[in-house]
Structure formats: structure tokens, C-alpha cells
Length: 147
Image (cartoon, rainbow, N blue to C red; front, side):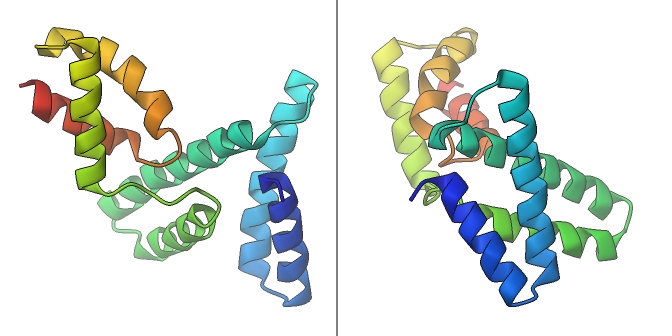
């Protein structure tokens, strides 16, 4: 079952169980996917749907930080719940140790030795961890291992 089909099935289940919050979150994601499909005039494959999901989660994490800074705990809780629902559709996330191991391997592959090589490392690394690790975590690991 493709990711789009899973979203459709989960939307139907949310309707049947009258889970309005989950239904709203899934509809938002499906709308974002549909907008991109319309713009590109093609149906998105699973990898492209994962990209959309990752982007939506990143936006919510950024919002979460702002809400917490502003002391808006009510909004922060809502965004946390949205993130949890969206995370269900991403593949199993890599642990910090796994990310560091992949970063170390990639640094050796590209022959990086200083922070000046960070762009090369990130370019080779991101396709390997796409959808399975947070970009900030990957970036921190690269900076740590290159310093």
C-alpha cells in the first residue's frame, strides 16, 4: 500500500471513529500533497510524499519552538499532537548513534577533513538519511565530527 493510499485509509478510519483532530491533520497533509500534484501535474510517488510529510513536520517543529518561546502552551500542545500523528507516516527514525555512524562513514567516503568540506558531506549524506533523521540532528553531528 502506498503512502497516499495509507493516508486515505486512515482518513476514512478517522471519519468513522469521529476523531476530528486526526481527520483535520490528515486532511491538511493531503491538501499539501494535492497542491504539489496540481503544480507539478503528476501524481507523487512515496518518496515525494515523504518529502511533503517531512516538510510539514519541520514547519510544525518551528512553530512549536515559537509557541514555547511565547509561552503559548495551549498551541504548543496542539502542535505536538499534530507532529505525533504525522510521525506515524515516516519510516523508523534513526537514533543519534546511528546518525553519527552514517555521518562518520560519509565523511570518510568524501574525504572531508575540515568544516570547509561540510557542504560536500551534507550533499552526500542527506539522501542517505532522508525522512529517517531530523536535518538539525544530522547538521550537528557533521559539525561535531568535522571540528
